[in-house]
Length: 267
Image (cartoon, rainbow, N blue to C red; front, side):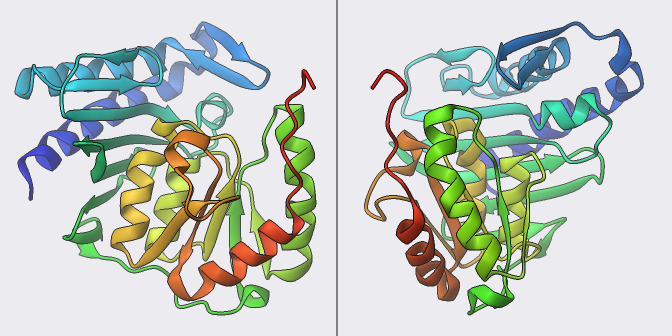
């Protein structure tokens, strides 16, 4: 295992253990709103602090981009952290949430670790080294046709994204085997890598939602692109489409055929 991945696994497990110990005291937590249906607790912040502590001990010079603490440091290695992806699920006792750590080296995503505390599932991927779930190699599904595919998604809150998204949701709902909206993009991408979902799409994600999952999907034989422009930078726009290679083109055509332009609310 790559030394960076060793540290990422240690950090993810440390944060995951902290989150697990907090589940029984959710009713005592102070909950703040970062926006409509976007919540943060001291568990999110403390879990991120635990992750950064582990990273800084091993690599004090590396840069960090965290959901809760923002960007710090200036280095060719950047740790992209979501300490608790699926906070709303966590607050409601739904066991679909995860710790996500992606590692970018010289501008390219190289490693990804996603840990689901509720199931203790550990997903790991390294560029050129494949992807694993609990130390077993994983590959995406063999789905080739949309009408037999199970697709994951996330429903955007911003009005301009929702208006663009709803026609896509209708198209996929009408032409697939089903849609699942589980509430953790990081874990949904891990599911695509493991073949539990045949594809995933969402608008307006942040880098920490996607970084680790992108590496996992790609190393499991899948394709990840910007949803509107397959040649675009998904880490900048947050409009993501991930699917096994043989299904990706078909899913992309269906989504882009239904997609509406994203018109900012101010317009």
